[in-house]
Image (tube, rainbow, N blue to C red; front, side, top):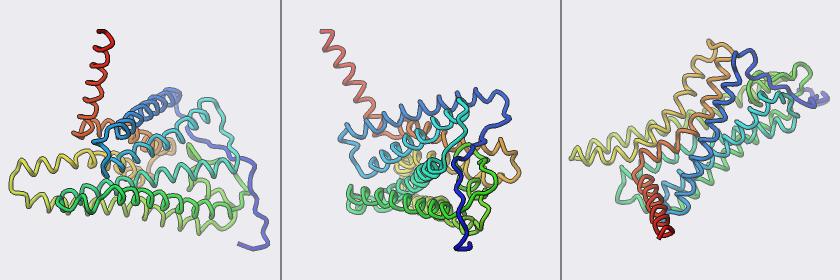
Length: 316
């Protein structure tokens, strides 16, 4: 870019979003229901982990962080989508757009890295069960979670830094349902090839690398399970991984499908599929942990038992 060129930054962008979709208000209502479910369910999971001392383990530090990330991510996305399209507030200022983009993608990166953390926890627990408490201590897990946050924030600071250098002298209409990175930088009228490179490099490190690590982890877990003599013991060990496997499928499958067929999908179908991929996992993750994890089940039973005892005591 010519160093003497004046950078043109628009006062606002227009988010085109879900235009031309019949009965789209029902979809907004569906998103709101998923959002309410996500906040309530993840709030319950976080409360259980906070108040039940038996859940204060390295694994549940990562589970708590995932629940927190899901709440923040849903709260950053859905209310803004509802406000933008249901109440027709499609204008967003330049600075607010970049801020929105930054926080949304930080959370998206954290979801991916958090799944890798949970995979690491299961890998050590099954392949090195006798050394698990030494390798995966509370301090180690807190450090790993903090490192994931630092990586996420740094990646997006780099991405936003390269967006700031762009000049917008043509359209200000973002062809997405939020301030999306790709549709945003492609509106620029100066050279955005560095942004193209960033849009390829960052997903490799924060989406595909964690997925590769998860797949390799489960290959190692499978090899470790094969060495266990009793079928019952093998199944017991495998059941500790089922919740995490379901979380991985729910998070990555929509992303893989959407990105592989995105070029062939109509614009509105792609936007809807991407929005569903963003809001469905936070609503389903806590349900999976409550239904598939024995420790969470026991914690829920303890809460209901205390509530019944308190009710009986008050009645007496």
